[in-house]
Structure formats: structure tokens, C-alpha cells
Image 1 (cartoon, helix red, strand yellow):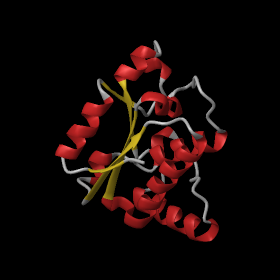
Image 2 (image 1 turned 120 degrees about the vertical axis):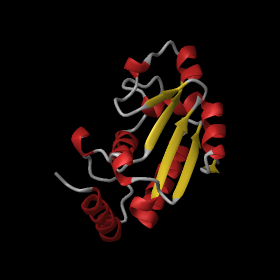
Image 3 (image 1 turned 60 degrees about the vertical axis):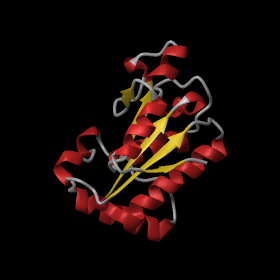
Amino acid sequence: MITPTRRRQFLQWLSAATGLAVLPRASEAEIIDRDFLGEAEHKLVYQFNQADPDYMDHILFSAGAMLRQHGDNIHIVITAIGPGIHILAKIPGRPISDAVRKRVESLAAYGVSFHACGNTMKTLNWTDADMLDFVEVVEIGANDLMLLQEQGYSYISW
């Protein structure tokens, strides 16, 4: 099994060699265990609330850039609410490109946490079973953003 440190080294090499934001897909067994790594010095939460392809690319690329910059010393949460929630669905109700889907899966494999707004899911008649396996469902996305900020997470939205 690849260690988190080796994964990060590969990620940095891949970024330098290709400049690509899409990371290699890891198996479910390789997903980083945040408890094993301990508390990260840096904590960042992105609000993901749009289904626009350019918006998706910008947020996900930014999250990847932060991982490349800080390695194992950052924990990133992407909280999807409203139209942004479709990136986390097994069968999205809006168009999601294969590149975006792969980027989301790769970021999750590298320790990025993805939170889905339960309120948005209710309006779509979705359940936990409709979401990708690594997604954590939170009751209210806005509350998740607030609570994470209270825990020291820096908040990014655009």
C-alpha cells in the first residue's frame, strides 16, 4: 500500500511534470485517514454552490493547488450546497464532466473531505445512497460552513 507521504510526493512530482490538476485515482483502501495523520496546521473550507463548469474547475484546481503547496499539513473541506451538490451525486441531475468527476475522486483520495448539504438533498429527493461513497452528509450546508469556521477553517467562496 502507498503511504500518505509517498502519495504526496507523487502528487508533487505529477504537478511539476505535467501541470495537470487531475490526480491519479486511488482505490478506496488508499484514501487518506485524517485521524492517522493528526491535526493539520492549515484548515480550509470551500463553499461549492454552482454547477457552472468553469466554476467547478476553478474550485477543484484551487483545492489541488493548496494540497500541492501544503502537503499533509492541510485539511480541506469542500461543502457542496444548492446546484453545486451535483458533483457529489452518483447520478447527477446536472451535467458533470468526466474530468470534474475524476478530479473530485482524486481529491477525496488525497484527503479532501466532501460535505453534502442535507437540505439540498431533501429538495432533490436524494438520500445518502445517492451520494458518492466518500461524501459526508451534513444537515445544513450553511451551518457546516459556520461550524468549520468556528473550528479555525479559513473560508473560501467565489
